Image 1 (spheres, rainbow, N blue to C red):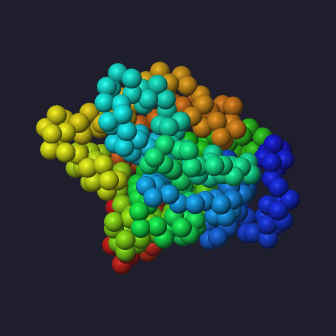
Image 2 (image 1 turned 180 degrees about the horizontal axis):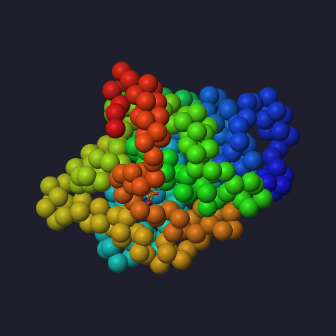
Length: 326
Ligand code: A3P
């Protein structure tokens, strides 16, 4: 925690004292900033991103709320976009690098630590990832007629379990532990990084209805059920449609297999690597934390009936009339 504080600029410290705060999951506190909850370091990077980012014609932005399949989406988008370059699957970067090493996060990496990077020499199309809610994206990114934003959404029941088990591992020993029940309450109150989850999901969902050419809304559960159709849609959306010949050659299936949970989980880099989330400054981090079960519906092993009731009610209230359902 002391390290975190040292990295905070005076400007950020002055801002933080004005913001509502709640107990954090992996930091002492999270703060309500521009309508959503965030860790202090990310607030600093988001401000810098909003000030300095310049859109480029072919930008691709992969957006998620944490633990809804970011690693998978990064792998898939990278594999689709670069499939001509790495048609020989023997030397595919995904076999030796974690997906997070191939597609950087805007707020944890690119604009972290007060950097204002020159992004002009990024390989085109530039692929960025983010957990920032739609409304807080930099303006030119939202207005661009060419930027492609893909949002991957996951059932809040599974997202909560995945978050709890993951963040429990990342919580520094210097902070007091908190219970599963308390975590559930925090989640339902919206107090989690990038939360409330319903606002995050609805922000991108509503935009995908308004501007379907620019924002593609995908669901983790649908992808699990039918990856090939979803990859066909994703390829077309990103401007890298699969040709009939590729379809015949099984290129879509090859990409689905390369990026599958079972394949990625067994790679050496993901079994014994440690650096995929170096930006969290957590020396305990292991890449295998990113590959837990990769299933739909694991929440049934963790929820009791009153939790099921509470989250179902909350979702009904928040998603009612929106068209979004799980
Ligand atoms: P579980 O904890 O339910 O297993 P994120 O990548 O946003 O951090 O999300 C992590 C969740 O996605 C974890 O869910 C993880 O197991 C799952 N996951 C990781 N890689 C995956 C893949 N290739 N296919 C499907 N799910 C994957």
